Length: 97
Image (tube, rainbow, N blue to C red; front, side):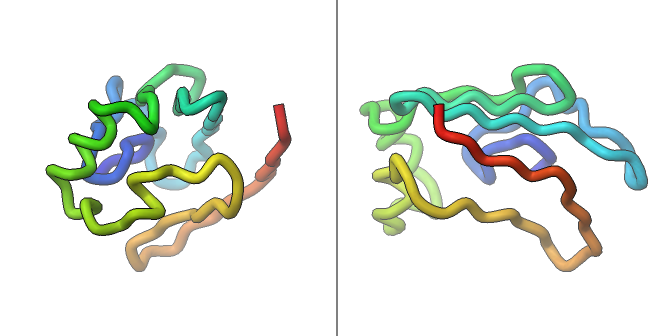
């Protein structure tokens, strides 16, 4: 449950989040099921959705009954998550590749 991780599934490596009060730069690229998450210029998580490995990882997690999560959508909404602390976002851009 660290910045850049795929919540409770894949930890971010390296864990390179900046300290509170500084801005982190994030990039999430989704292309044909291949997801790459960059935090401050470094790849920290990558996976391919829709594979047997992905489905097994989800089946072994608290997300096993979340069909919309397991069968990751190819388009739709995004969510920005927080756990009760003040958080700020800026310069959010979404574009189709």
